[in-house]
Length: 476
Ligand code: UD1
Ligand code: CA
Image (tube, rainbow, N blue to C red):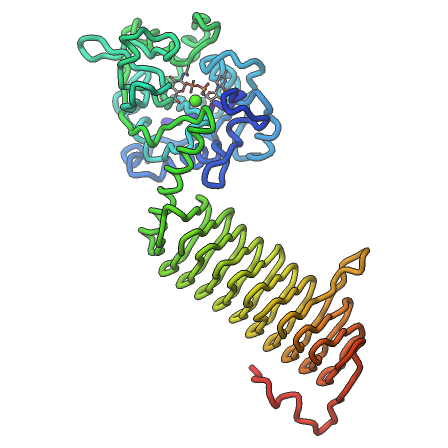
């Protein structure tokens, strides 16, 4: 059985990013650069390009080479990878060598080493599988991925002889004027025969830049007459992120890829140019996304929803048939059929049950709002449990903060909160109770009671035969 070990180089400081954050933790489409590369590695065995190898080839857990600020990267990715430390960053060849010990401890020791860089977030599993598959079927010593780029690019140039055979890769800073005109470039994905790689790396001298370049192995293999195979990819799939301009380019490319996948899966996106959706977001078919909308994190949206325009949704879960118009949702759960907006804000811990209608300028935080409840205008509900079929009148507020701590408000099913009611927490309004407009409720209201005034007092208490509980409230 063939096995391969993926090694991802991520030890560099990323000087050109001008950042205190390690380069591979910078994000595109809401995920760190390194996460995109690891996702591609994970996807490799299930791609079509891998199919010819499937029965015989298995992967080891990726080995990530870290150096500058290793700790936050390890914290971010945990058990997902093995980690090798490159204490001094002496080049990409030196970085691969830092993983040698871990590779040799793998059981079984892999025959093939797949190397890619942690700063190429657009790489796909399909492409990695093509490199692997060409490498193994050709029984090559070394296989690497190339692309055609513009002459101004900062990729290493692939130098070939008159017969078209690869002789070396020359980095731009060491390239002659003539070599700079070569448009075939090194994309930074390699497969090596394990038994050839390690001795070759140990023998690699420091180059003129004082570093050990992985790319210098190509000239070594060529001079030894080893079999070198190249695989052609597209530039878009292999863009490397060295600075923030390239970060923005990757963001644009990845974003359009995410939007296309959603559209092919049945989501209508009216204006892709003004729609920002992270790579991990899931959206059901027949949902329509209107312009100026940003959906981030692990948000899940059901089918047949209408989101936007001008809406931001982060880390939230929405059921089917929800409408969110010009609003902001953070760590919020909406059950089926909820309507929000325009201009409302659901903050972390908001849970709106089926068919809640939350209208203009509302805010909900850390609260459950029961099914079919209406909260149409200018209300704040924080740290509260609101029952079903409740009507929250315009301008009503839970006064949840007493200056020291947050207190809870409970409103029972079918209650009617009159306009401009202040619910001074901790307080409970019983089922089917009513508060008058402008009342300041600082004591519990019994079920079915009507309270008014400042502070609110009981105006009417239900009698045993009193039908007021159900008169004007539609019960479930
Ligand atoms: C590298 C290639 C270049 C290729 C390009 C593709 C080399 C010498 N050059 O250039 O031919 O066209 O990628 O994107 O390989 N790293 C370490 N330790 C080190 C140095 C780098 O782990 O000592 C890591 C970096 O964190 C980075 C990756 O290796 O993730 C590539 O290094 P980088 O400096 O970005 O190389 P490029 O100049 O882009
Ligand atoms: Ca790079």
